[in-house]
Structure formats: structure tokens, C-alpha cells
Image (cartoon, rainbow, N blue to C red; front, side, top):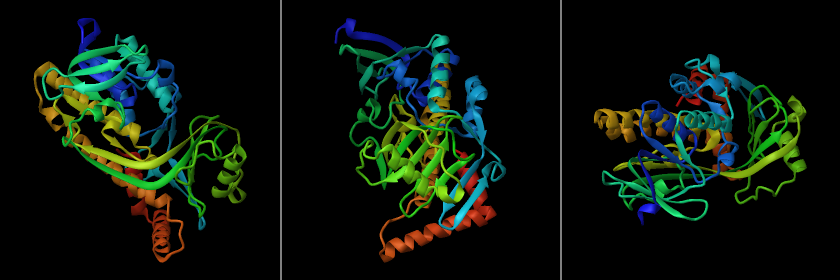
Amino acid sequence: MTDRQTRSASDVVILGAGPAGLVLGNLLQERGIDCVVLERAERAYVQTRARAGFLAANTVRILERHGLAEGLRRGGRVHSTCEFRTADGRFRLDYGGLGRGERHTVYPQQLLVTDLLTRFLASGGRVEFSTEALAVLDADTERPSVTVRDADGRPGRWRARYVAGCDGRYGAARRSLPDGSAHRYHCDHGVSWLGLLAEAPPSLDAVGYAVHERGFAGHMARTSEITRYYLQCERGTAADAWSEERIWDELELRMRGAEYGPLRRGRIAQRGVVDLESDVLEPLRHGALFLAGDAAGLVSPCAAKGANLAVLEAEILARALVDALVRGDSEGLDAYSARCLAYIWRAQEFSHWMVRLLHGPSGSDGTSLFHNSLRRSRITSLRTSRSHQDWFAEHYVGV
């Protein structure tokens, strides 16, 4: 590769302009660490891709601690109630008054990403959009590099002291790990959701979890005019297989609109199928390459942990990188993987519990009936046991 094709160098090259990458970039920029973010998508897409919107109390504290919470404080809504609907009736949990007394802040992820990106660029940060990271090379040396391809197909290379892989489970960071250097823990939960973004006001003032014999349905408000819905569907269902009328009728049925009030309908603006999976790598470090966000551990969306883990991991990694680059202290980098994995596995355990709470086998054989009876017992315990409710609240909001 010629010198002309070697684009530049930075102390830290960050792959991916999602919550993990942009929080990390802002925190490094705050401490005067030279860094660059490489993002394969265009800026407009980065700022509009809809993702999760429930920020944990600890996530809000991290953002506030570093002056990154202005937007969510202005536009976020505090939320602390969820409602379960089953064949045995419905009940609500005001989880903000249970456990540690913590609540969520509802703030769509695309708005948070826009805030973080605006702040990073305004403070002099560099983001290379439409730049696809192809591979991380020489991670086991003191001068790793990242090969890239820009929107015109031209090759390039970024040299760094450290590389932060915040580019998801299919990104260059994971692909570049040498065979045998990390152990992958993967679980396919055997459940698929049709994820929907509806141009419709929320139909209830709570997160709604509907357990129905036809499958799970979920209701999550995003704004006063936009609502996220989920419908359990057969594995392999195409995103466009169901008409809008069928979607709304199925949501109405599973959420028991005839009993508890009709849903407020509107145009389905976005849809996609999500196969519920969990995926963790151990360790999260290979030499000068560190994994964060979904690249480190993918959590099924049942408990809204993904973005919250990403922000937490970014803060832990930022502190460790500052210590190493400013003071020559590598203790934080050496401990990074173990520290983050403790949080990741805690989130995985609760997410797995939620998957089993909300979904059951559809068969009528003895094993299926047994597991569905267990699920019904868990829901009953959650409705009646204060200690169970406190446990739920602590893990539901916590990371």
C-alpha cells in the first residue's frame, strides 16, 4: 500500500458511530486523546436509524457526568411502569418504586446518536463516513492498523496505538480476531419478532407485555406520536409478509383490546424481523484491539440492555485508554474484559429470563404444557410477590 493510500494515524481508531463508538469518542476527546471514528454508513443514515429508546438510570448518570445529556434532559421522558396482559388478567408494576427505585428515560436512540455526533464534531472530532473497515491488522503489536475502503472503492489504511471495535457482531473487529483467540457463547432463543414502528400515539401509558396463546405482543412508546410494537412470528417470516390490517388485527387480539381498550392505529412506517439471539465473546481484548457494544456481546431485545451496556463499556474503556496513553498505566486495559463481561453476563441472565417469561412452546405435548405452566407460575409470582417484584425492578433497569 502506497503512502498516498495510507490515510492517517491516530492514537485510537474507533470502528462504528453507534452509542459505544460515539460515547467513547467524546470521552477521549474530552481528555485530549487523538481519535477518529470510522463509519461505513452515510451520516444521514446514522442519525435516522431507529433502535432502542429506553435508557437506564446508570446510562443517564454516565451521560450527565460527561456533559452529554443535554438533549435527553430536554426531550426525554421519565418512565417507570410496565403492564402485563395474560389470559389470567392484567397487572401493572411501578418498578420506579421497587428495587433500587430507579426509572428509565425514554429517548429514541437515533436522537441520542445525533446528540453525541453533533457534540463530537463540534469539539473537533473526526468521523470518516462511508468508510468501511475491512480488517484490523497487527493487533498483537504496538502499531496496529485498520484497512478501509471508502465510498468510491478506494483502499486506505489508518494506523493507531489502539483500536476500539464498536462495529457490531458482523464488523471488521470480530472478523479480525485470530482463530482460537476468543471463545464464542451463542444462544438462539428460537423466537422471532416482527418489529414495527407505527405513526400512532401510544395506546397505554406503560410498556405493554402481552402473553397470548398466539404469541407475544409488545407495546413501547417512543414519542407522543410514534409507538414501537412487536409481534411474535414464525421463524423465516418476511418483513413484508403481513398486511397492515393483519398486523393491527393481530396486535388488537393479542393485547386484548376488546377487554382493555382498542389500540390507536396509524401507518406502519418501518418494519423488520428480529430473531432473538444472544452472543458473547470472551475475552474482549486481543492485544491492542478492544471490543465494545454489540461486538462484545449481543443481548436479545427483551430487556432493552444493548445501548445501555454499550455506553457503560465505552466509559470503562475510555478511562482505561486515558490511563494508558496519559499516565502509562495499563491496569485498566488489562482489567477491561473481565469488568465488562461481569455486566454483560448479568444482562444476559435477565434477558434470558425475560425471553422465557414472555414466550412459551406452542405444542400440546407434555413437555410444552409443563414449560407453559412454569411460565404461568412465574407471572403469578411476579404479580403477587414483593420480593420477586423488587428483583425484577433492580434487574429491569440496572446494567
